[in-house]
Image (cartoon, rainbow, N blue to C red; front, side, top):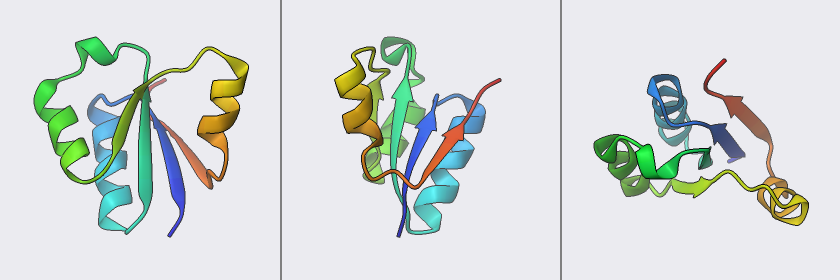
Length: 77
């Protein structure tokens, strides 16, 4: 199992999260506007054990988030 960070939980991020979970991967979503997330989409992600966090701005927090990450899925362009 690998650890995946997904940037954004829009339509593409939702698809990437579902792919990761279906493949048995551990996923965390970083979102720059967690207060504006689609509630149903966030609830489904969380129900599968996916953590949704605000995009960190502190360098130490970024380093902590990326520790042990195998892949980063950028969900928006």
